[in-house]
Image 1 (cartoon, one colour):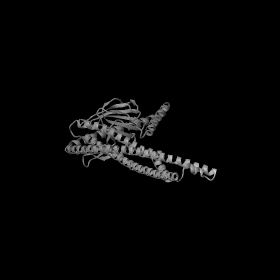
Image 2 (image 1 turned 90 degrees about the vertical axis):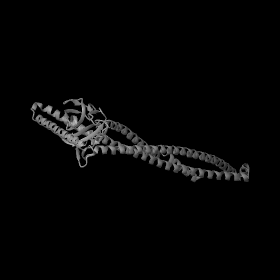
Image 3 (image 1 turned 30 degrees about the vertical axis):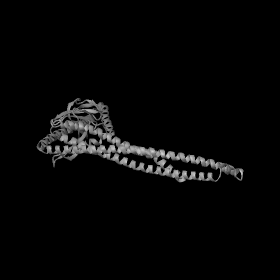
Image 4 (image 1 turned 180 degrees about the vertical axis):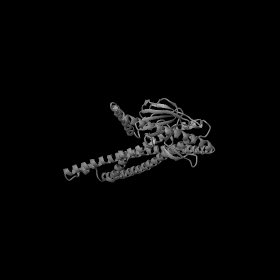
Length: 406
């Protein structure tokens, strides 16, 4: 009977250990949340992709949206695979638990049969009363009576234990079947999502073929953008120089203005410090996805051509609002033919630059707050809606993705 109890206790601990249940449940929840997040991102990218496809002409924006969409689809397929693998591991573990429980039932039944046989054998030799009255002493009679009561109680407990373990087996089998059904659903989802991925890659190849024929136009657009970005760099350098010169003039101001100087310097230092403290916490200036990252990189289509991006490009939906990422003061509003309207905002020693605006709702010298709407993104004739966002410390360009929240 001891062996049977050990099996039962082991199975019970495996089944109902809080750490085991929590660890498995947590992993499953994480994967389900990841899948939901992927689906939400896919939904947003699909809207952006639809807008670029409306023009019936292949564009670089369409290609970037397709690249992002394929990446998201691959992540979705990967998450579904992880969910299937987790369920496989769960089902294997469930089968081991069921096997252990069934072994418990077998051991308990064997022990119960032994007890019944022993009881029948004892009953066949002599009547229970005869067994009691044949005791040599009163103490022996009491001992025999106590033994018979304990033996009867043990048989009843053994029967209850068998029922309990059989019930656990039934419950575990139901849970395992539910997981198998869930796995079948996920396998069907995986097949469907792989088909979607294949269709997206076919679209991608078609767009690449079409754009390869438009090399001259793409190079012309790239040259125009580069010229505008050089003008923007010069403007930013000019603004920073003006700020430094203004600080120098204030430093030479008369004695009566010293308090004002200190207050101005303190305000700038406080704002800069506050800006730095919020690293990785800044809201995104616009919804969408990063279509071009920070730094030097190869052109996504034109072979042998490198691009230097001093910020990031965020592809978004038409007429999407553009918002300030932090409190600050508008230093300049300007227009460049290649990149549209641009707003430059000062945050102490830091500056954020928003280019590619159709409408601008702020003006130079205006104080603005975090998440305040400063304009709306413009759309190109090709149907591309894209914000160019820069972050600088004085004139030094920084990677915005290292400052925006994940």
